[in-house]
Length: 586
Ligand code: C2E
Ligand code: MG
Image 1 (tube, rainbow, N blue to C red):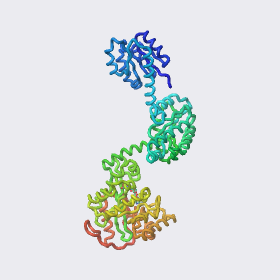
Image 2: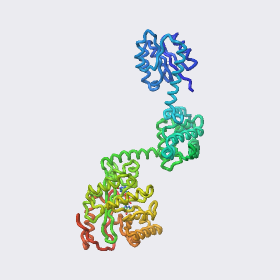
Image 3: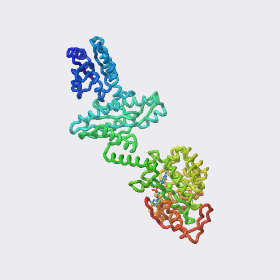
Image 4: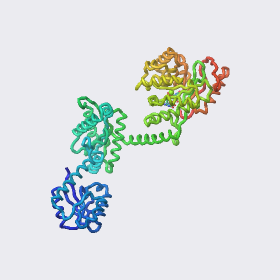
């Protein structure tokens, strides 16, 4: 325990000396003869207790107390006032002004010693609690900051300070499945292990929850920090015995290295946090050093997050539409709605640049609902034989309100459900296939069509195509792109088209850009195509023009059914002749 420091303020030199003498056994003493003197002598000293005579010149005792309470380091220390019995009137004011207790003069010395000891003990305990984590007994965030500040101010030329930020992997799972007492025990055990791994000069702190931090002062280079981090990852990852149950967790660490003069604790902690975020993204159970590029990337991400949240609120999005052409009829059968963000400064932003972030920010649901409504409204104004395809994210699929959202969009627009196609990817069937299938069946009961999108990428399980009666399978554009040069891509196109034909469903080839590719996918049995060869995605306003162009080209064929009329049967054509069109934002 650190030896405490007591400030004694009394204008009576004799009384002051006696008080100091009595205190010497318990603490270091600073003597001051008046309020002004006290303020001067306190500069740069950490005071644990103040004993103040109320009747002092130049700044009376009450003013001094008020002044001390205004200083952050003295806000919470005990202040005992001394007052002569005959002037007790000022006592109430002193207690109101911030004094914690009082002693009457002349002092009873045995009571005095007892009182001071008691007050110092309470102050120590309060100080300990203020600086330590109650569960693990480790220094807390406040103390870690102090130690880090200290380490940074003392760093010698050529030496460095490492700050490690740790996050436990799988801790939440233990807490949720085994209960909070087990979670608390686990944190205690982790704290014990961390204590054994560091040197005496290092500080291990608990920052809250399952987050710990370590300050490693006076290291000679980053490799010292890497060695410690490596040991932490391996030791924290060893099994724990919690009430007879073996538990295994891991840890991920972000490290910031400070050494240049002027490093600020808050910046170093933030940098370690950024590195931790990166380490988690790279795959847990590892460590990662901070570098300034990360800061920039994170800053950009932060900016984009703020912009995106605002964009959802202000509806800064637009739908572009890309035709899906039937290979048998050589005519547009549907349009796929593809979202774009009309960014106030960056212009038109493609979905690949913001959808993942929207997922992470929890914005994908309002966004998906907007797309559904907007696309259904648009389709309602098209000729009756045209469908609209809407992409839905797996997150949307896991949300409770998806079926209601689809129903609402249909009701609001009055669109025939058979004209809405929902494009889903295999990812929806991975996490909770039972729920996903139930939702698919509910959607099907509404009458909408369901397509398996981007097939062939990621998981490509044929069993997924058998698990639900999909209306269509869309072969990912990566296979179409490579099928002319690469045998295995050609084989995938062939296999999926054959399977789709066998199941009696449409096989749509995505990303068809050349006549050669078109001929190949046709030969392999695809029934629909989508791609720049027919048209890039276009704004809604250009759809009538696309349809007119198609009608002019096919003027010998039957006209498209206008709104509200059934479609005419279509003749078989050699190949789609819709010329390539370019649109912004693709
Ligand atoms: P997707 O569903 O596979 O959509 C097709 C993508 O391929 C579109 O990219 C389209 O512009 C592009 N594309 C079409 N033809 C060609 C071609 O011939 N060559 C090449 N290289 N690319 C072609 P886009 O619009 O950037 O969309 C990317 C993805 O973003 C979509 O892939 C879809 O998964 C997702 N997405 C788009 N809009 C939405 C939306 O409203 N909601 C959700 N959840 N996802 C969306
Ligand atoms: Mg799609």
